[in-house]
Structure formats: structure tokens, C-alpha cells
Image 1 (cartoon, helix red, strand yellow):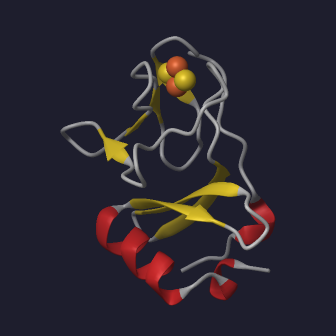
Image 2: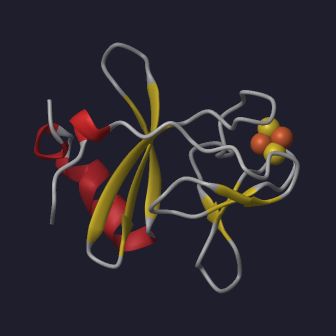
Image 3: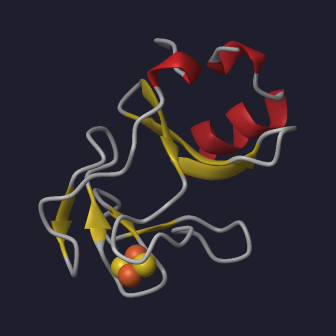
Length: 104
Ligand code: FES
């Protein structure tokens, strides 16, 4: 399955908001990110305590919208590389899922 196979509502929400939580039919949790015309899909699991980054489906960004923020303890991640650049897991990264991505 590629990003084109994701529900239209998920792609539309990610495009509008920059990122959205997606739960696959198999129950796997992902973050679908759309930044600067590029799509990324990450496993929705913070490398700090292995919890989802979102709260009730809402994915948060820094005020300037340049970094994803984990709601649990405030780790900040680059939205395209998934690298943690601030907070308790600096140097670790979200797990990217290239098989679910496509350009666009
Ligand atoms: S679980 Fe994400 S910062 Fe702690």
C-alpha cells in the first residue's frame, strides 16, 4: 500500500494540518506528514517512552510549525527526517515507513 492507498480524508487532513494520526486497518499507528510538498509516514511511536506522539488524534507542532512535538514530554522532531532535535530523546529518530510514502 502506498500513500495513494490511504483514505482521502487522511491525506486531506495531513495536507491541511501538516500532520495527522492514521490507524491502519491492521491497527498499526502512523503519523502522516505533509510538509513543503513532501509526504512522510512514520510509525507513531516516540523513541523516548515508545508512546504515540499525538493526543486524541491531534498532532502538535511548535508555534512556528517547523517541528513536530510529542505531547508526552515535549520532544521535538524534524517533520521530514523524523530526527529528535530537542527534548529527552535527542539524537534518536522516529521510524520512517518509506513503503507508505509517495512524492506529491
Ligand atoms: S514519550 Fe515522547 S517525549 Fe516522552
